[in-house]
Amino acid sequence: MPGESLVVQPGFWSNYLLAMCSDGWCAERPVPEWFGDDGADVDALSEVLFDPERWPVFRVPAQDGPGVVVVYRNLDGDHGTDYLLTDPGRSSVEQIASWDGDFSGTGLTWRELIRIADSPACAAEGVQDTAARFLLLLPLLTDPDVPETASARLIAALAAIGAPPGTISITAEHLLAHLTRRSRHDPTWASPLSGG
Image (cartoon, rainbow, N blue to C red):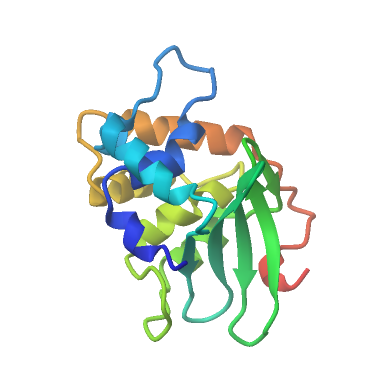
């Protein structure tokens, strides 16, 4: 089921990103309020996101080149999130990553992530808002060498989706620390965007 309308629902971003904030490296426990959500909203939306009768799909098409589709895989006993690379010129898709309590796959470099986030294909169905696109793609970041501007970009995206000013910096810090520490991107690997 198309899930794009869910990204603006209270509780969505906590469901999608909160697990990446809790890595055990910091004594501060992440909470839904970091994303401007409350526990009741998170619980209500998780029933929709993880409903075995539905598989929410979030399309992030790009104007020039491959885009990404995020799929909540709600199989009985096999829940997870799959990330598929799509190319408008091809009928096939390629799974580039999955999240099953832990990340696996090639993911994207910072540059690839920004290119997709900042170039919505306005004629195609999917998420068009660049902040939401950026945050949907964020779990795919496997680049240990993000630029100094990454934190500011993440803070701006979190502000755009309603994260409160009092927690926005710590949320961005937790997310970036998790992503850059768990990185498995080897510069010698062929990028999924280059057809490698």
